[in-house]
Image 1 (cartoon, rainbow, N blue to C red):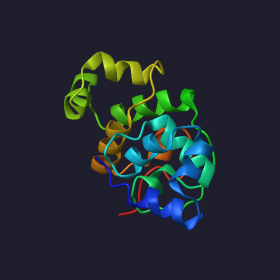
Image 2: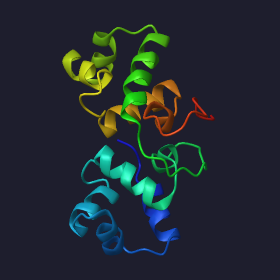
Image 3: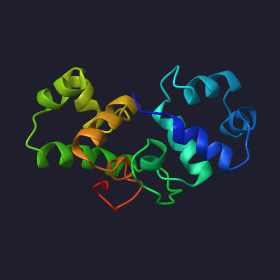
Length: 149
C-alpha cells in the first residue's frame, strides 16, 4: 500500500483539520482519518476528490516524485483506453497483469472496458513497478506519461 504521508502533508499545508477535510469531501471524519492513517484503503474516487479539492496530482498524493498541480477530474473513456494501451505496450496479457495484481482476469477486463474504475492499490502497484503516471492512466493529464525517477 502507498504511504499516506503526502495526504496529511497536503491537508496540513492547506491549514485544514481532518474534520474540515472530511466535510469538504462529504465523508465522516472517522472514514477520512482511517484513510489518512493508512488503516483503510483510500478509495480511488475519494482520493481523486481529495486531489481535485487541493489541486494536486494523483502522483504526488500517492508519494511519487511529482509536484505538478492538477485539478482535472478523471476521464473514464481515456482511462479504459490507457489501461489497455499500458498492458499492450508492456506485452502483457490480461491474465498476466491480473496475476501480478493478485486479481482475476475478469476484474482486469472490467477496468479495461471502463465498467469499473481501477482500485487504488492496483493503480499504485502498476505505477510503482512500471514508472507510469497515475494521472496519465486515469486520463487526468496527457503529460507526463512516465514518472521521474
